[in-house]
Length: 190
Image (tube, rainbow, N blue to C red):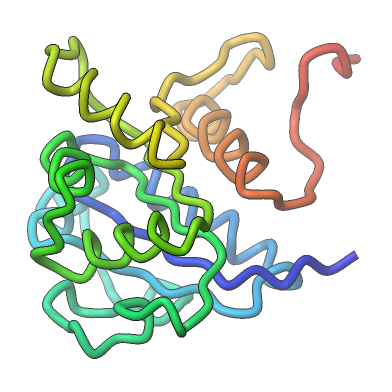
């Protein structure tokens, strides 16, 4: 059964570029469930991606990339009809701007749209430890309808590689977003 999601992926400069990469890879394999996927990299995300993953080649991104300063992009308006936005990894700075209603770039504007239109916004946070401001911003966003999904990998599937470990977070996020695919779940192990 095709879901045909219209989805936005945001990738910030928080450490954890692997989550963004694996998320894009998994979505590529789920293309039959995606009608449209639009991707926004923050200004610093490409630097972090290059540092953590070795290189960044925009030609290898399988979906349409939007400049973070492009306020004429479709996702800058609720009329574009995106149903889900995932920011992975999500920096605390980006989370704080979204929580405060500061739409100073396309990513925060798109997140603001998702909240005001009562659509699904999933923020994969990457920070430890948390200070009280982080916690209050998360509370504010949760009360506004966002889902905070910390990048906390699971170990009960017994991942053998770093990619498999990070994929436990990606699969959880895509399950929260409503995608159908075979993923490890507790109680269904062999």
